[in-house]
Length: 139
Image (tube, rainbow, N blue to C red; front, side):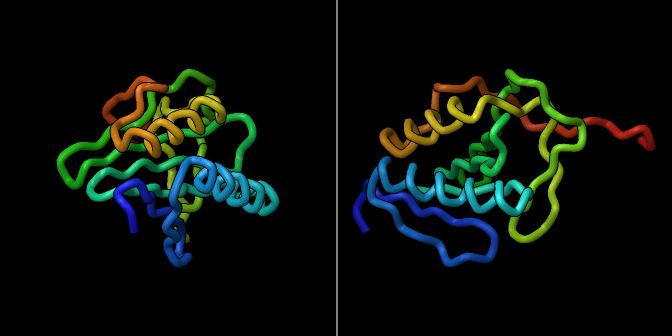
């Protein structure tokens, strides 16, 4: 494994080590098509050491990103497109609600992934915010 490799993982699938932007793009295209066909979007994790960038794939109208550095830092994309209140996805085989106001255009999210693969740093292609969930009517 080289210093530029990125580990891609999702659900219960065996993680894959990918060498460059082109390989990551191809893998995300394939996973997005699978999720679209199943009509169930999923979150895919891309990691390099303690840096982790997660992307929602499987929707053509929106995506979202989550950034982690170990257990010390977490941020999600600041939404720029309308997000359904009930947006949910497959995360490790479980239905998971999306953070509030985190949706961005698919191409913007994909550009952020490319930036992460090239630079191994939090992408600047999106604005970031502290993740939060909407308060439910029951709260």
